[in-house]
Length: 316
Image (cartoon, rainbow, N blue to C red; front, side, top):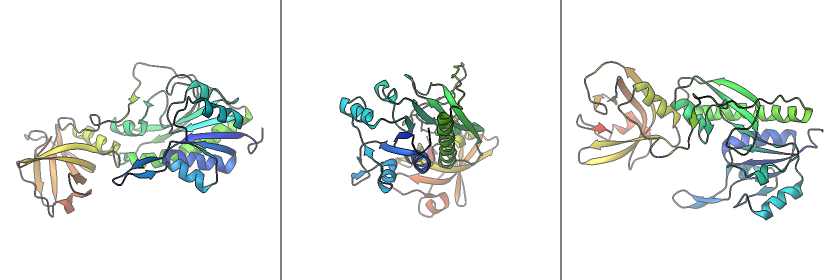
């Protein structure tokens, strides 16, 4: 089967998926793009299109935005398109009535080295957990989440300074290259499938929520530092600041650390010129970029030009 003759339907929503869609569109015949419905977003609740839809419109690709993936009319439309292969990148879980349609199967790109870090937020969690290595995987979708036979993988080192945003951009490029290689190998019949083996020490990549994005100041300094990196720039590691009679929500986007012994309770601060040092279990965390409730995100030195911390202030 010639590469331009293979008919592909692409499923994706976020900016992470656009890189893969772009490289597929350059090399193959993408006959349709399935993406999320337009949704109101922001303060003005303006209707927002997904990153994938914006790319598809700019490149005159057929766009389908189903409200229900199990809807009979949607499934009928997919069948009528007679696609050879479905490719899924950063999309929701597909029912079997969808992923079983194409003769070559449905493949998914996942931003971790499966079977480790199955789930919704693998890029965040590998940084939060202080991993040194991660990668991307392609696999054939089956009935369960992220458990299908692995087709191929690529590995990358995680730099100690990498934030979620940094690693996101690195992995979307590596992932797009892996998708291209995977499709070429499927066409040529050169794939060697590897079943995923479950072991007791596998990590999960659970969906982020208010609780698991909260900073615990009693943790080790390095763990707090990793949490801040793993949640920056979105959704942000949050905590609260008890400041006089106020309790203010705080988001910390970047920081540095000092490991040293001290006698301060966790969360108390030391004020030094244009910076603060927040006491942790085994040292201090020094915020670099911070957002205080009611203010925009800014460098800590800029914040301290108008916001006065005092030694009774405490992060909780």
